[in-house]
Amino acid sequence: MTAAAYEASPIKRQRATKAEMEERAEFFIDYASEHGPVTVRGLYYQAEVASLPGISKDDKDYDKVQRQVLHLRREGRLDYSNIADATRWMRKKKTHDSIEEALKATGQLYRKNLWLDADDYVEIWVEKDDRWVSMRQRCFDPGHPCYPDYGGRGISICDDWRSFENFYADMLDPPLGLSIDRINNDGNYEPSNCLWASASVQVRNRRRKRKAAP
Image (tube, rainbow, N blue to C red; front, side, top):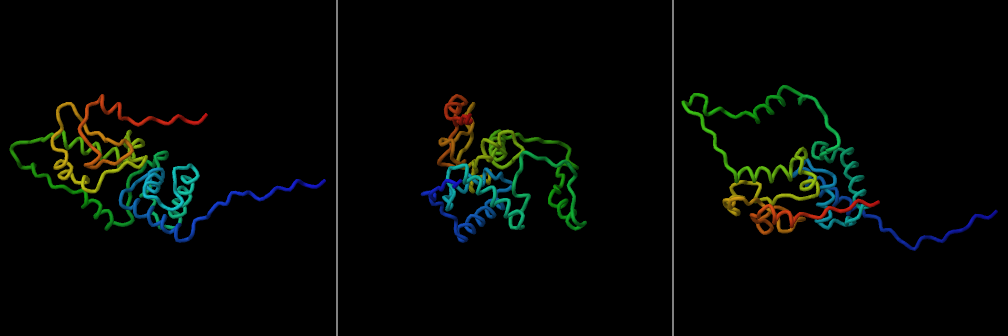
């Protein structure tokens, strides 16, 4: 019995060149080093926004990013600590490879108690600073409950607003009852995309969640 013959597929899939693969690799390494820990999904969103060759809004392209990030980690080019894996948690005390490293880490955490010999104790609570801290946690802390809807999908904070002083200079004091909102809900936290808004306005601006495919 003769097997049926099939014609070659008319679809020609273009493979990425070595130069394009290296361009992607350098982008992933640089972005994760600067903003890490980030999720692979977050890297994919940033790669799509940056219009990297061969990366578009397609699940197959997300798979490309996953494979390349894994390859870079195994090669030692991309530090494992720069990628957040929110599905796995390691519970152990932090350890160091040497006494020198332990002393260096301890020194980075040391803060002198300026109130130790003072007669009075003072606490200063700044609400606008709290809003800035919450904004950073949503974008950069994988352990924050809101991270998947912000940093996990590529939402970040502009370089100027990494400093509270710059953030306050642009936004000033929030009006009573208002909190920070992004005009474009898929855009970053930056002066041109942010304003103080009420809860009702923010609800209307909330992104529509995509329905899962059946």
